[in-house]
Image (cartoon, rainbow, N blue to C red; front, side, top):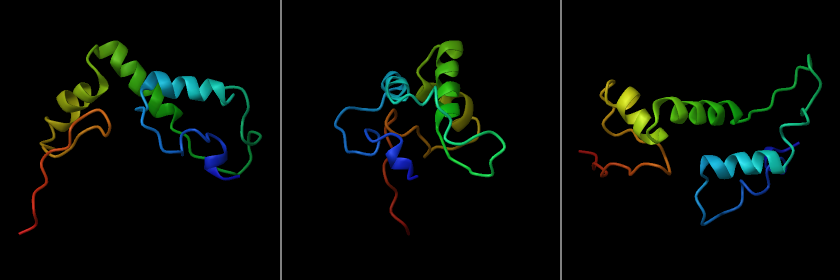
Length: 99
């Protein structure tokens, strides 16, 4: 089963941003919280972003600022990652031409 068949709306171009609220709505609208893709113990693997969505929602609730700011304050700046940003929520830094 192709990943795109699980969430048809996610793989189509959209002018609306994929906010956490919109991702949760899509997740529940497609019944992904109710049905597993395969029985437990099966050797099949399927990738889902659910854990990242849960983690991001939890970080925003606990830390208070938006997730992009949490990433900047707690991960990117301390590690000296000046060009890193959270896609769709932050502005990319100006491009640096290769020498």
